[in-house]
Image (tube, rainbow, N blue to C red; front, side, top):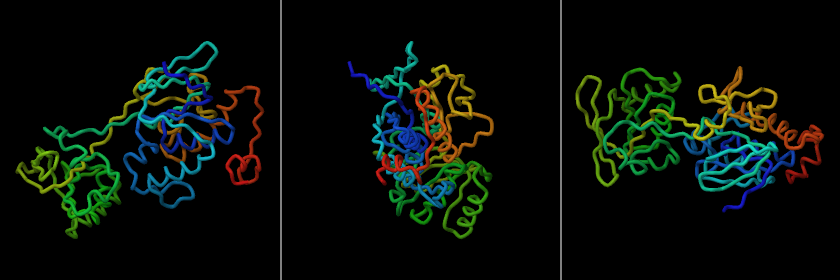
Amino acid sequence: MTETITTDVVIVGAGPVGLFAVFELGLLDIRAHVVDILDKVGGQCAELYPEKPIYDIPGLPIVTGQGLTDNLMEQIKPFHPTFHLSEMIASLEKTEDGRFLLTTDAGTRFDAKVIVIAAGGGSFQPKKPPIEGIDAYEANSVFYAVRKMDVFRGKNVLIVGGGDSALDWTLNLAPVAKRVTLMHRRDAFRAAPDSVNKMRALVEAGTVDLVFGQVTGLVGKDGVLEAVEAKLSDGKSHTIATDAMLPFFGLTMKLGPIADWGLNLEENLIPVDTEKFETTTPGIFAIGDINAYPGKLKLILSGFHEAALMAQAAARHIDPSRRIVFQYTTSSTNLQKKLGVA
C-alpha cells in the first residue's frame, strides 16, 4: 500500500489560480500538495496558449501563458510546494473528524484538512473533427494546440475554425509559416471583430488564403500530411497542399470525479460564497473558472482575488483557534523573511 501523505491542503489544479493559491497559503505558513491531470504546471495557459500573449494581468502589459506560469513558479519557490502531475483525484471520502481522504488514479493518497479546487473548467479535451483516419496524423501533422510556433515555420498550414483560437493563430502564424490558409464553413466568424478585420486585411493583401468549406479527407502516409481534401460551400471539391492542420472546434470540458463530490453543481460549475469561496461542504473551496457566484467574471485576476480570500478562510478552518493578523508584504518583516527578501 502507498503511504498516505498527511497535509493541511490539497490543491486540485496547477493553473495560474492554483499556483497563486500556493503563494497566498504560504504567506500563512500553510504548505500545499498540488495535483493536476496534465504532465506540467500552468493549466490551459501552458497547455493551449503557451506563446499567446495575455494583456489583462495587472502590472504586466503583455505576458505569454508560459511566461505567466514561469513567473508564478518563481514567486512560489520559497514555499516548496509538492506537485503530483499526470494524476487525477479519483476518490474522496470525508472522515468523522472532518478531514478528507483523497486517492489519485495513480494510487497517491492524501489525508488533508482542506481541499482547494482550482481545476479551471475541469479536464479538457479538444473536439475532434469527424474525419476518417485523423488519429494517424495527430501529434505529427494535426495539432489541437500551438505550443511552439517555430514548429510551423516554413510550412503550409491549414487552420480550420471560426472562433478566437482559429483567428488568433491565423494572425500569429502568418509571419512564420510558408502559407496560412483559414477554412471556415461560412463567411461569419465568432471571433473578436478586431481579429476578423485583421484577418481580412491579410487576405486582401494576399498574405493569407480564406476558404469557405469543410474538410472531407486527409492525404498523406505514416502520419505525414501532404494535402487536405475539402468540399467548398459552392459544392465543388478542392485540394489544399498542407503540411500541418490545426482544427479549432473548441474544447469539451469534463469535471470527472469532482462531479460526484456532492457539491450541488450548477451547469458543471461549483457554487461558492463570496466571503470565503467555500463550497456547500465545509473545508472544500473552489476558486477560478470552476466556481460560480453572482457577478462572476472568468478572468485570471478574479481567480487571484478569490485565492487571497480563500487562504484566509482556509487558515481559520485548519486551526479555528489561530489569530490571523493581516500583514502587507511591503512592510512586514515576517512575510519578507518567508519570501527570502528580508
